[in-house]
Image (cartoon, rainbow, N blue to C red; front, side, top):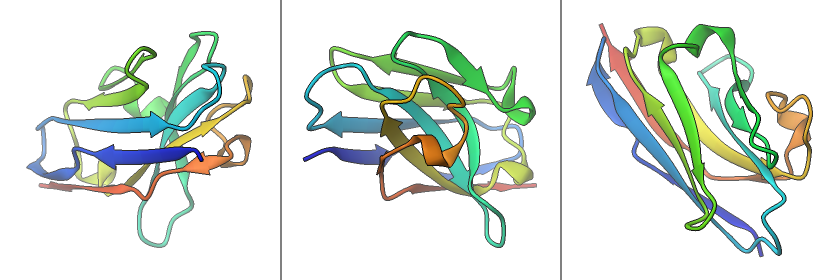
Length: 123
């Protein structure tokens, strides 16, 4: 059974940093793409950053230069380093995994989801 568990959320002031982690388990092989999504109250779920199982990385425009996604295949861990956080980054952040290799910032490309970790940025 596939399981994704996020950690690392919290509250920071504008300009601060946080590092999110996602522990994955239950995959039969390593051919799975992973991503971070976020959802703020009243808004749709948004793709933040993704890494395909071929190593290609995608970011949504609003986080480019501030966020960095990384994956440790040996440890089955996904991370998101978030720097220069702004109040508009406040959301529930989710880890996702799936077998797709394209359109990796779209929620429908993923089969498995974590429970989410809250990130709150105050001004």
